Image (cartoon, rainbow over all chains, first blue to last red; front, top):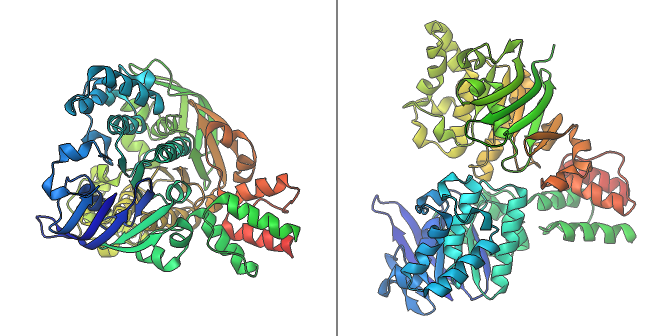
Length: 273
Length: 280
């Protein structure tokens, strides 16, 4: 569990990035943190693995104060995948890249081998084992960066903007994969602008604006609320846009729909009446 | 005469084993709004590079076939000449902006062509007005939001007065509001100035109502070239992993249950209107 208690954070240049954030994330949740550029999303998640320490307030990971432990110790529990894979990839082959963290964390060599094989398979990267990460496409490099974090099997997995540069098929795959990982009793947290992705694969949406949390709830409550969307410069999911248009024409048609199948079922039910 | 004519075009990058694009045949007329899409690595970007002569003049490799832009064969004309016909805007505006302020950025291309001072002034003013960025005139690119930067990038290629604007995922690094501004700008350029648009995009819903034609690519080839209605009612997008816009997806799913609209909706408003008729 992650507990964030009244956290404030100011960067050395004077920018106040977090203004009194309180948030509780239980084990096994799937959360999308959303909001416009500069809202404080990335700053917040860097507090979850201790990369940043609160200036005021507390962050507790499984009861441990992040100020009183090291990033290395937290790394077994909390994995963070950066937005730009090039900020974290440096090895000459994909396999070495993945082994690096495992070696540093002191896993025995037999287990390292098992974990590398598992993660390459899980992320469909087996054929790139011997390739240089730098020779891969942007989307593939993002998957390698994810692999290098996922191989530790962190209980809490955090991804910053994982869908940038991914096409429709790759997004679907990534979404399903994160869902699968979450169903194995892990916590999955993403920072994203992608409302379609967030509404399809995440149960809880936390919206930030100007260093504060302005909304927190399920997708069909948060991403369908025009006031919240306006305040955070987000657009509603396309399914919601459609349900709002239909509600203008048809009495009592629900506006809080984010999933296509739900919309379709509602329409079919009305056609049968 | 067609504005763009591509005949039997294939291109293989130096050191690559397989061609990035193969057997492309395509003609595009003035004023069309073409949506070009397909999975990552399908050759969209390579095709765009062929349109303004970056291929074969800048990227090395083997090119077969011909690309004729407004009567000019790209093999025989340099990039600076083709740039006056085709403006190319990239995904990341930061890679494209080089000057210290917006006004200088816009003057950069026409200065390089050696146009007279007065003409440069006129073109910069026109571009500032057209993209509604006059208030940003003295700002440095790094002071701008992503959406503003991308509009500056578009303005900077418009100063060469191209008939064709090619945009390679211009909204993918922008937040939703920034993306909306940029798409509206592109639509206006097409409608008001008849600029031919070739837009590469993954987020299809917001632009579909403006497009006159959809081209889908997969593994270096064009696998579908048709009206947006036809394109997304076919099973090809599904097969190659391209998402179907929600209003057409609804049309397709309802058709399966026996409910037929009398036309294919290209946006939420149309879909709602058609649905209201059926539900009455």
